[in-house]
Length: 230
Length: 302
Ligand code: FES
Image (tube, rainbow over all chains, first blue to last red):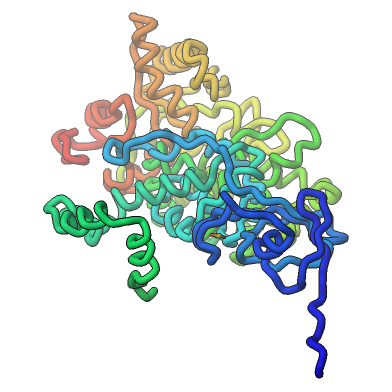
């Protein structure tokens, strides 16, 4: 009988403690292999939700790297920790009350003006966004550009953790996109859908859902239609 | 003449009329200014601490952008941007060690070679176009308008980077003569406007505003002309607070040099944007027969 080729094992250091894990796993799977269970810090497992922020360092490298645990392969000698949540300041505002005049971004996040353009946020972004450029665009009130550049942000918060000027880039980006939706590129589909909701189009479906048993809801969820990305 | 243009943040926010008038005037004088595709804040306040390399990043990154787009000259209008960026230009040119350290920190960018030269728009008018040429292009001479130029701190100091003599500057005076306006020389033209104290020590600024504006007015000025959006904010909008504090205070309008130039070059009000100032410059422009009474400007009659 032929012997199955042995999987190569590598060492990863989770919060300083060494674990042997099979090669070829993502950081998330490697941690699970080592016995960690994700109660927080994991969501979609597909690089969309931003819940699985990770900081790591590679063997022989002095630099800290930032990535998503579900998207990054574990490497031998990697030292890492999870950063599932960033308790950063988030401005309170009501989109309906935001005014176009002046610079609405600076009103809610005045610290944006403190950016020294060091680009550390950009280096930290696992989505490889030009974070500093969207902060700068927000500063000069170029909402369109800021919204476009920050569009793929998944709100992991790594940028804010690294910023020497204490800016919360990812929340700034969110506000920018809201302002953009309100003043620059008003979404027709959204308005249409809000009207439908208000007219009660989904009331019967929702009411039916509310009465379903837990198990049935689970079935419905796993059988759901997933719209294809265009 | 073809060069890169660095606007700075304020020109995209409070200083809109500064930019529209400058671009239109420059075009009328055949200066082609191409706004950089990518640029960031200038860094705003030049750090007075030694070896504060962190604060040279912003200006230097802008120089990298200029370089990336294939230019070696860049022009700016705001006195503050000019000052912060010019001082950085000098520092990294004089000190290759610092240039290297910053380049290493910005490892994701191409190395800055230290070759970009920054100009203030006033310098281009003086050195590249020349006042004689400007004089020839004037369509609407500002005859009879008495203007007090105001330099503030940033255009002429420190003297290594000043665009003119720091004690006896004349660059704005000469421009005024070229467009046929009357120069009112004011001894306080190089005083500080109070700068950022406007945020948390308003009374300090209203005191300066009272002093500077009253001095120009006493010497017969119809308006003050300047090149810095922050000085503009303090000397113009703060007149509102000054008038509350000093009941006998009577103000005058404050405008950018580009607005008067654009006006003299015959450009229309939609680029001059005098309507964006707190103290309305129209009445005095009408009184001096520069703008016609009743000319429609931004929905209101001058
Ligand atoms: S778990 Fe959602 S991005 Fe990684």
